[in-house]
Length: 126
Image (cartoon, rainbow, N blue to C red; front, side, top):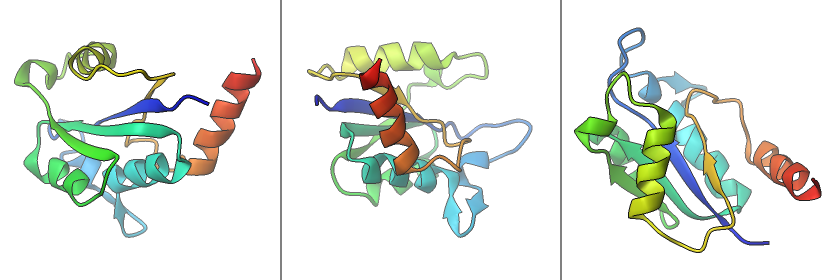
């Protein structure tokens, strides 16, 4: 099975819930939960945490490969920026022979590595 590229977008600026990606749930930030599920799944050659916030990027820097912190350009960190714009730019800037690209939102903190593996099994079966 070819491995993939995982993109975790985590902007620092939220108007309704400031610093939401650093919010704690059972002792871990939402960003840590996304990173942990991606790493534990074993599905990814590269896991990129994209953010405009140095505190969020620092969370990725505490992980070993394949996790990388990816500072986000200001033009891609606006309230109106679509996730697809970010994904397309990252894929362009980080080419590789990936079998798939996954977008993991930190705001889905109940997702686990098992969920990711089960999802991949379903995709491969179809």
